[in-house]
Image (tube, rainbow, N blue to C red; front, side, top):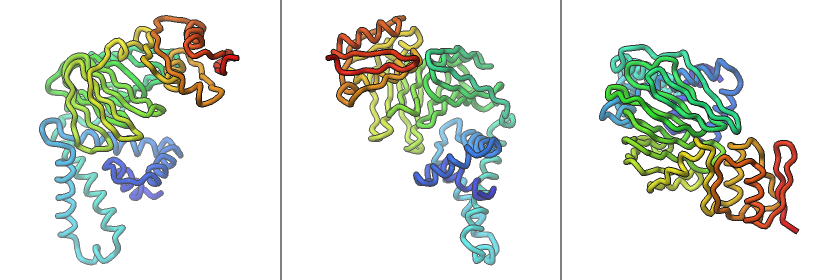
Length: 330
């Protein structure tokens, strides 16, 4: 894929205008080389940074950019328009990128920071990360946090894959944004938990203190505001959105090695056990995976957890290396 084609596809992806096939093609292209990945990250960084700090919404910003592109196209020589649709599209993309750069330049006093750090955790592992502004992040098992070594003057921007609990250092002049593949969470200073594993069917933002604004990637500029004690969940399969009262013990349980299950299917229990203990549950059939569990575990050994599940579900199990095989009790 040529450079101008990559810019076009990436900007269309960031605008939520790509098809499933195009998303798959882009993912393959990014995975081909470190250079491709860097191009994608650089364009995404500038794109996200160009989003407004105050009352200007993302859609309004994009509208302004499109108006600028339209003006440029009207003023272009006619022979360029006759040359073919691709030249017009490519020119539009270049204009769009330039406009983003100009917007960024005049809204931020410092250039984008390109020096990033990445913290990751394995199954059963947790980490505490302190960012340069004093913000504390507790990273859950099987998670990844990417952040600049030094934030720019306009805003604080980090990327999360998995789950983390944030205690954001208050700064009314520099919003703090957590970006995941499913949503963006913007705050000034607050305590909240973000759960957004790619393997799960839903992503959840839980607010314990302060106030947050959540923007869903699939809905563009649509915004949701949470108050303390509320959480918002989005189901990636049905696209349903739920906003309700949270259970703080369940939300922050992973920080104290606590697992709380309230009528959960063993299929869902299995992923939490994998995160906590690093083992995979292998079910003999779907009927076992659909068994419901109501239990609380805190600092329990894997054997104690499995014995409780065995008694509740009338099943047998055997542990072999990092796998737990579950069968119907005979």
